[in-house]
Image 1 (tube, rainbow, N blue to C red):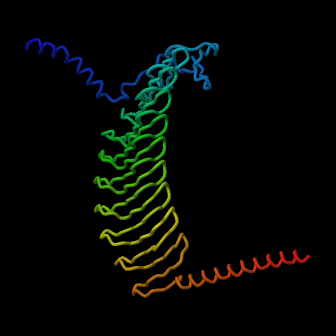
Image 2 (spheres, helix red, strand yellow):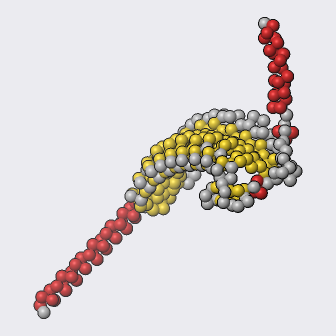
Image 3 (cartoon, rainbow, N blue to C red):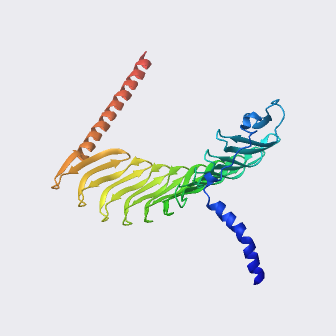
Length: 335
């Protein structure tokens, strides 16, 4: 027991020093540059085409060493490590305030591992990105600049493209939105939620196109609208209802072509406007006023009569053309 007390007494000054450093604002722990190093560009030149750092004195020799850049006030701006002309290792940049701006890890000139960008003067994370050989591969996290440093969203990448879940959050860390990607395209469930955690929309995508049943919800959890899609085309029922479940509007499609009866209703559920389609063609249309009196806009009988007349006319035209061809052939035979 005595030995434990002695150890604790011995460690106390070190623990106090560490805790004091952590509690000290980052701008009070700024790093001051050596006088002889003011700008990294005085030592090296960078060839963008080959992604290579060369010694400034001859612009031909590969540079190796630590390179430091400073602000005019003497505060360190950036410290990078270069090995055989390539950035290699953990590099840190700083704001003019002295607080960290970013921490990145390079392997042979390429970003690898987790890079972190910070907000100024708070030491809070702004974003966190995972790279593999200079390509975003893994988690991409964006943070809020508040006391809790809340997460705004988390997104997954594969070979530089969104792949997997992207989750957005409210300030209380509750989910606001969840979507799925595959190879850079929306693919899978697409949902949003209210601050209370209730589902607002429930969509689905396939290879970047609308697919399956799409639903929009009222705050009470009842469905407000339902749509049916197949590979980006309307295919099936499209229905809107009020919070009591009464139909507000209803329509049907087949391969994005309107089909069947499309209706719009008054708030009491009685019909207001009706349109009937056959293979995309409007064949009947009528509406009702507040008293239920019907007004025909396109009558089915008129449409059928018009169609019959057109068919008869087409038939007569065909007969005349056939007769003309026949007469022409007979004249040639006589000659």
